[in-house]
Image (cartoon, rainbow, N blue to C red; front, top):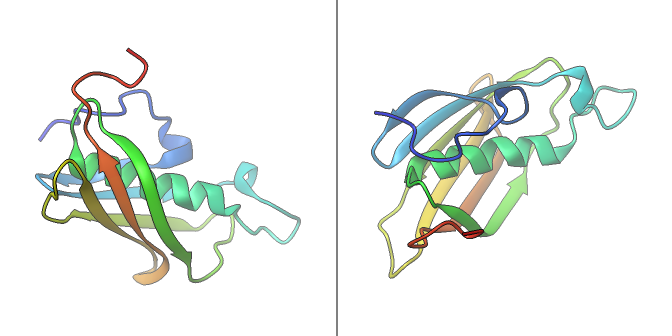
Length: 127
């Protein structure tokens, strides 16, 4: 299956797809020193969220998909240098809303969980 959305994503910041099928994606991200929030090596949550968001977009995989809302929980800290994997699963579409459940895992253990509400407008939101 080809990636149909978010063609300009920087894999170093948001991860790389390792699995893509209709309604499901798996994305891996190796965290780096530039993602640290402090001297302890704590990765800023925005990078974990970015990984999860990208996985959600790929689960929908429509060229114009955008994020409308997100409910999420950060469960455990992540240290720079650790490899994360996001697993996203599209739920049944309701009206125009595409709900995607995403878990971000570190060594198989959840560090983040979220439910993303996505929309697929007829044309690009900036068009």
